[in-house]
Structures are given as structure tokens and as C-alpha cells.
Image (cartoon, rainbow, N blue to C red):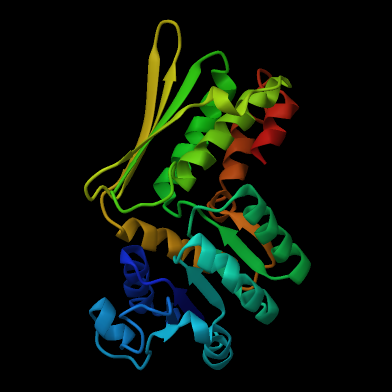
Length: 280
């Protein structure tokens, strides 16, 4: 039985809580909200719309005490980047594995998180988009950037009007994957060569589209989330993966996508070793 703590009870966080609650091999043992949240001290069952099961929502002000008492094996963090950075000192001290589904980190923040995982010897999954489908999109896009390195690439991302980070963490990750693929020839590729168009409107859960345009044709690869249940499904896979592991991981390791890419290209003489190394 994997004991799970959830930090962040927004719309995605509540979907994750419901899905964990329905599992026979997982148990929700604690839930953490921000200090001024109206969910503080409420029954988690009441908040997510299930029967009361004895877990009451605590404030992040009491994080260390809560984690010591509830003894989770894995934390799922869907709060915000500032809260995540503030909480990492406590989480790393206690050595509790964590899945970070929040976005909006600086490059320095991400490097700090990666170093913490390695120095403190516990497990972290960084997943700016935890959905299985969008990670497949990243893989398909990276394949395209290797095979079609003379084409132009452009990213469009659309999210609900309340999303604060622009561009989305997923769009930035897609851009990085394209640039890594284009670099397989050894050429220096400018970060600015891949434009990102961001739209914030209505209640759109999330859509990412990659446009790949040559002189005579165009390819479009897109993914759209219709429901936040897709985030919960990805979180379940991540929980199963990170349980009892040590190190820093991304969703491509959770889904074994690096192995898929290696198997696809390893015996292809048109793709050299540099391209393969960029996928790992």
C-alpha cells in the first residue's frame, strides 16, 4: 500500500485525490493547502465529494509536523512554484519522494531541485505536464525535429484564463525537446528559433500544438486535454514509478519513452550516434 500526501487542492489536485482514493493499492494519508485557504481543517472526503475517511486538510505552515505524523511514501505536489521551492527543504530533510506537477520555475530553480534529489538521495519526478498524451506529443515532435531538421517549427499553447505562467511549462519543455533534436548535427541552434504563441481564454483545460512547415508541406502535431482526469491518470503512473526510487526523473522515464526512441533509431544508419544521445 503506497501512502500518498497531496499538496495543492485546486481542480487538478482534487481529481488526483479522487483517483488515489479509488485505488486499492494506494491510500491518501494527508492533504496540504495554503495557509489562507478556506479548505483548511475541512474533511478531505467532503472537499473531493466522497465519504469521510478521517483525513483533514492541513496548512503548509504545519507541513513538517503533518508529514512526520502521516508518514507518506510519496508526495504529489500540485501547488505553485513558490510554495514548492519553500517546501523542498522540509521534504528533502525527511527524504520523502515527490512528484512535482507545478510549473513556473526558473532555470535556476529546476537545477536546484535536480541537485537536491541527487545530494539528499531521494526521488523526484519533475512533470510540467503529467498527462501521458502530451508526453507522447513531445516524443513525436522530437522525432520530427531529427528527421526534418530543415523545417520550421512553431508552438501554440492554449489554457484557461486563470493560468498564470506564460508560456506554459509544457510549451517550454516541447521547445527544449525540439532544440535538442535539431542540434544532432552539431550546429549551434538559437533558443529564439522556436516561437511560442500563448493564449489564455475561457475554461480551456489545455491544448498544445506543434506546427512543422517545409517549403512544400506542413505537419501538425497536437494534444488537447478535455478533462483534468487525464492529469490524475498520469499522476497514478508517476506514483507507481517513483515509489522507493532515488534520483531525478521526468515523465519520459516514467513512460520509458527514451527506450522507445532508442529502439526506433538505433539501427537506422540515417541517424547518427549524436542524435541518439540527445534522446537519452
